[in-house]
Amino acid sequence: MKIAYSLSNNQGMEDVQGVVDLAVRCEELGFDSVWASEHVFNVSYVYDRIGDKPYYEPLTVLTYVAARTTTIGLGTSVLVLPYHNPIRLAKVSATLDVLSGGRLMLGVGVGVIEEELEAMGSPYAERGAISDETIAIMKELWTKEDPSFQGKYHSFWGMKFTPKPVQKPHIPIIIGGTSKAAIRRAARSGTTWHPTALSPEALAEGMDYLKEQAVVAGRDPSEISVSVSAAMGNTHNHDRYSLGEDPEEILERSRKYQEMGLERLLISPNTRDQSQLRPIMEMLAEVVIPAVQS
Image (cartoon, rainbow, N blue to C red):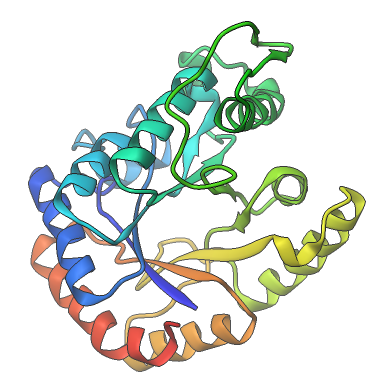
């Protein structure tokens, strides 16, 4: 199982250079990848967490990280697809994949904050349909020499699209979400299913459903991997599973995920205190990575 680290672009850190420096240190410590999250407005639970402090745009942060690193993977956990023009997102993502030498993993979701979706011009009730079309468009643009598409929201034909991603057949599509709709989306069109804060018991149920839906979609279930994003410490929400705070507890819970056959565990430090972030990374590199990373 690979161990990944969630950058603090979403934690209201005033020093954005410090966020990038953390990614550089992650590469030195042997983490598999670093991941950044997305919201456009500080609203709802985002505002409750960070108020009016900065929430940095993930692809911009990861592009800067790509320039400062050489091998570490670069992931989004997750981009909210209805916030993006799919053709533009395909272009930006392919460019970053080329610039980084094929290191991008595109984690995507449909969004949950209604007022933010509406402000971005995407009706809340259509977010699933918009997301499905966006995924289909990106795959078409990334993989076809003469792409064409006729959809509800976008149509195009008779034009070339460049650059193509380094990764073949395309940039990995990591489908975020814990709902059955998200699992069905992963089964239909995802490289990976990527839920957040699920206990091993809840994850096992979701994995069983994923296998069922993969068969329904005509896919081999073994082609779809599973990764989990989980926070350390107190999540302030009893419904969200935590890895705990003690190093041995974190290791024990990480091993449970490993035994379930996860491809990757994305660990969030769940703090904006920069004085704590490096010690947390060092602890994970000393205790967790040697024990579970393969």
